[in-house]
Length: 151
Image (cartoon, rainbow, N blue to C red; front, side):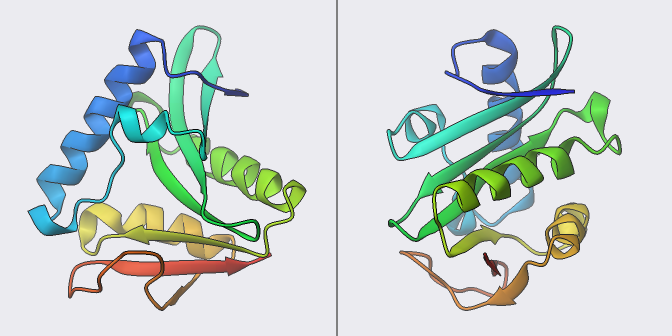
């Protein structure tokens, strides 16, 4: 598996991002969908990586800089054909390593609740993320939850 910085120009990447947004909208209350669309991911404060096996896109993940010391994980998604192959964990490990290189002291993320989110939550907790307070402009609800990792 090769993980590389992506410019979001490829059709496979855009299709996976569209599937990610559709999945978030399908499995979340409308007021709790905070997934970034393509224009949000193209923001200069956001870095996006993709995982590849040859010419086959396996997954995507992003890191948004919130401050000089904090970052937010965004748009983590594994292509359905590559589930349970360690793609998400490889992308997460890469993002954590980049955050450390940048000197971040904390990584955070917002996600949902329910069966559709359990695999992702288990992955984050495996790397030491713990539930905590809302951050940034997020508003707490019964659906969303906030995880943080001190680096």
